[in-house]
Image (cartoon, rainbow over the protein chains, first blue to last red):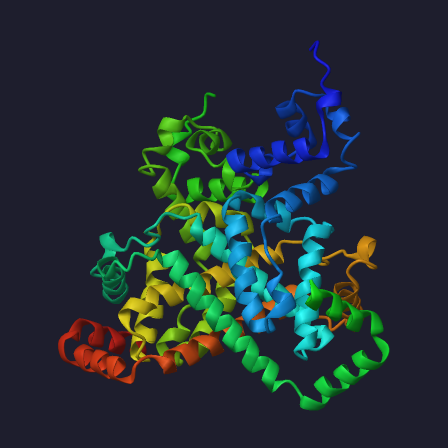
Length: 239
Length: 239
């Protein structure tokens, strides 16, 4: 090849090349060999910078998620913070929707992402959510956000019942109503905002329905023995 | 090749071969040429059975969705029916999760799928949801279901904060609590049920908050002028 390719390599360069492959060819195309070819280097050179494929995925995750803002968890009540966080989360993935399947296939280890989960956890604890429910709530909210990202990538008119109007008259009518209403806001955005509002309303109702004693006990335990966490609250608030 | 391949072809055979490619290689691998190769025929032979790639996608959609049960919409209130439908929807896609990106890329025209949307629409109208909101609600619920399918395909332990425990103590603690609680129910299933319950609770609250007059008017209009739809209700109920 003649050119000194190895000195030009860096973790960032490798991650960006991988993300370009994902954006153009999809998640399934990502192998160490394919990334090496894209950079014009031997596969073995990659391993001087990233330990293995899982480590490469974490670098891609860091790139995709770098614009997600979880700072609202430090200052707003959890239910308002989740809305702000979810919007910036969806916007970040909307730029790289084809990365979703790859990122879902490997456990999260990237500090960038763990940091936003820490913010989420501290805010939900502060509001009295029991520890055993927090990851369940997080997973439910993320499923909705990532499903909404997929929906954004579809055609503007996702439903085309025209050829079967007589068979399915009610659905054909509501599609016609939607098309004629022309609010200027795409259905995918309206569905995201409506669903997010519904999800958070419902989660708040579920939280209120949790046994009061269990929540009290959890709080006392945390104030007493979990000093590290309590200090963490203070740090977050003062940022 | 020597063997008479064309007479062996059928729409069903082509759709099943396509779904096998999706299951093993992912959505991005689907081209008419790739499907023809898998079946050992010339690409031109496929066009005797499926008009174009979009038509092929609809055949795949029909295969993937054939086990989704929307009959609950005929007999249960919409909020209970949605829960039953969503569970069977998720289960159907859980068998072919890699089909999701392909199916999201082409507008829905398959009668099998339009039929379940018809059931959804009739049930929501019966409960007083205004026409202009029904597709928005449908899209929000589908985003949650398909996001949950993606989550199911991930590793059982999706979060691995171990290497950064000191930096993110609260999240590390809730992950440890989750792992030690061992309810026997995977987090992905708990998150689906919790999120679905929250979403439906929230949607019900949103429906109750709609202007009462608008809902009344809508009902009167429907009883008066939309006979076709009213008859449709009867047909569905008598099934």
